[in-house]
Structure formats: structure tokens, C-alpha cells
Image (cartoon, rainbow, N blue to C red; front, side, top):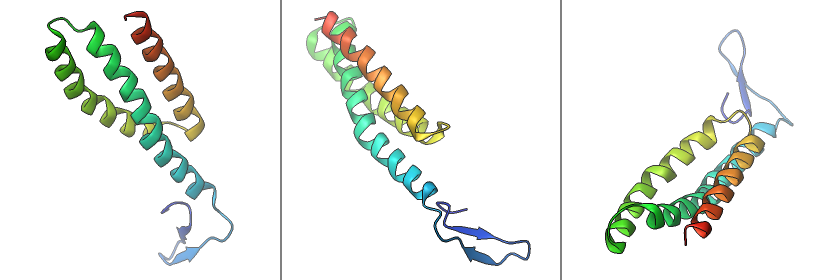
Length: 107
């Protein structure tokens, strides 16, 4: 079922389902959550890592930036693997808030 718009009957014929936009809204919400929310959480985690990793300031910043790519990729994959877009948004908000508060506390 591609975005919840089409279905295939028992004979293999693809049929259009009218009025089923819930799947489309869910995918759009997950895309926005992954792009915007994932970026915000990744930025908070990068700041936190840059403050708590050992070493000189330049090395900490470089390693935090390198690790941020893996964090962002993981967040994007998890956003689409979550049971619902609402749950994905709540978890992203919680992770971002904790990382932001820890980064502020570590300053």
C-alpha cells in the first residue's frame, strides 16, 4: 500500500481508495519530524557532546560534529520506524529537551 492511496485486490488489480488521506498525512508528518525535529535534536546532542567529550576544544568540536551525522541518521530512521508520528514527535521532544538541559548544565 503506497501511502495508503492504492490497494491491490485478490486478483492483483490496483484500486484507488478515495478519502484515505491518513497515511499521506502520517508520512508528511514523519518527514517534517525527521527533517526539522531530527535536526534540532542533533544540534542539541552536538552541543552536549562538544562540552562533555575529553580533549581540547577543537578536537571535542570536531568529534561532536562527526558523531552528529550518525545521530541524525539514526533519528531519521527511528522516526519512520516508530509506531506513530505522535510518538516519534514526543520522543524527539524528550531527547532534545534532555540533551539541551544537559548541555546547558555542562556549560
